[in-house]
Length: 548
Image (cartoon, rainbow, N blue to C red; front, side):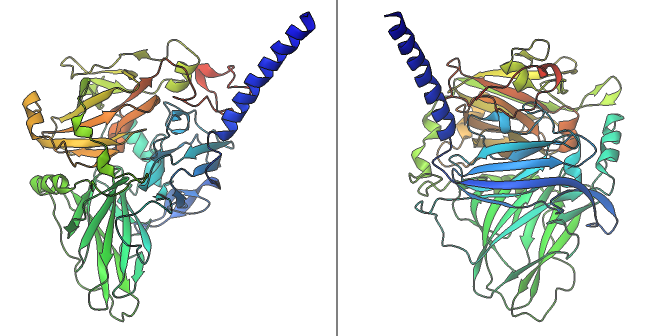
């Protein structure tokens, strides 16, 4: 009888282990896998006409493009051949149930020189245009970034005909100083000067060419991968039909130029319907004291006429122009997103938020040095990633509730702010900007609805002007000077998520914090387990990940 009882006991344990193993193996098993091996090195680049040290991936600047389909699994093995720690983050990829893979220091230990780490990502329930970038220190100023395209599954309808070709445009500002020199300036307590120039796909003036056939329509996926300035994008003599913004299919409005703020991505359709010759593709800075400009070339395949003369001008410091354009971008309610049901079947405006959070950016001096803060707390990284400290219950790393829901009027201070939030709650977040500069905010792990933006101070009466029907869902949003932007967001993704300024000097000097979205269920249904290959650093050294 005792032997039978023991056999039943072991049979039960074996069944549980089998279920766990099966669960781990089938988390992503129904979807294709794509494998990448990336070698991170230094290399010489010359986009501004002078020799600079860039960060290359497999010898490329920008790095390799990731092309995948909704729900694909991405296995990316990164080898760090730099002389310093390195991490890659995935701007816009939501890492559903998996903030372990987010690639920022709050979730992931750095890859040390000479070491390797393999990311396991999934483009879960997503489509659209995004990019990856190096997240530590000021590495982003040296390159190490590249495009991510997530295509719709074959049976999911797309609200436009397949284009003749799909072009990537990675545009943004660049400094001639190295990333170490920029870091030194910031560490010394100073802000950065205006960038030295702008680049398109890693090239300077007329350094890149997009070749088109007359009469055909092309898709351009444009991302602002810079660290300091908003940009305006335009193509000489051509209009652009906006079709997608960071995973949202939009109403197909036509524009002659588009403002693209730091960290943002847009998709447009351009028809080559002009006389056959070459045309300027222009990127210029917005809201800067001196307008920076660079160009690429739109080359008709039957053209014998090169570009000549000055490129067409664009908006420079006009705030209202940009604000009105931002408000004109609307959700296509009848188009499918990553799933076959229409985007508009999710009625975000009918859900009442359970919590209102107001986040105010500021530029205080602390201990005689320039810092940046959110609700008067200027973030500094601890020695242990927050996610690991939370998982292993390590004390002395962070405190929940160490940043207020509302602006704090006292003196700013340095800390490690983490805001607590409940899984499946629905929140309203107000980004309040009392400064004279345009802000760009990004939230990892989420897409949110931009329900309103306007000048002045936000008040509850501002809700009367919200768009509760067809605003777009995106992951990065601008806030104009002396203005506010309001978003609605469903907290449906458990994890530790970075909320940050996309202006990299502001982020580096403290304008960021983490949102801990918590589920008490402690279930793999809500959050995936710690990766077996997770790097353990700081106070997490000596702990174990998991046996399976």
